[in-house]
Length: 180
Ligand SMILES: Cc1cn([C@H]2C[C@H](O)[C@@H](COP(=O)(O)OP(=O)(O)O[C@H]3O[C@H](C)C(=O)[C@H](O)[C@H]3O)O2)c(=O)[nH]c1=O
Image (cartoon, rainbow, N blue to C red; front, side, top):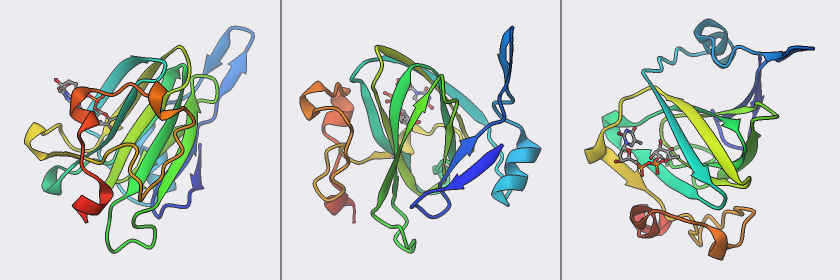
């Protein structure tokens, strides 16, 4: 596996080694020892999540606050999404910046989003199965978020805003300016 730096400090694209043959393919979607060695720190993932969404569904931008903050290792099992991370760490050189990466079942790329980031994705294919590991448990009371079309961040979601389908909860998330 390879970790590729992004414009956000501590946020990496992960490219696994895929073994293809005439039967299909095999790859280690996660190996704690190899991942922590490549990252240079010990991440202890404790919860796996999976979601299924149709084209245009936009989940995010979400984070958990304080002691329940989560680092995530995200991937797409089937379909195509634009995955987005926003650095919300005031002392980071990339504070207030975002990175986006296209994750697909085909490219098998993963995205490591550390604690202190907001995370979300929009589905670009007809449907997508999204699977990810978290290093802290879900804690409803500590949920926070950022509105997807925030004018300060100006995220290019690759879809017209009118085609983005959000939950009622996500439609009323706060702006970056009100958070900081
Ligand atoms: C996140 C989560 C949710 N839930 C329950 C709470 C709701 O009853 C239901 C759907 O939750 P929500 O609408 O928040 O799901 P998403 O919009 O996919 O949320 C995720 O969206 C973006 C992509 C993220 O990075 C976060 O991991 C997460 O916030 O699942 C749980 O039981 N456990 C959990 O860990």
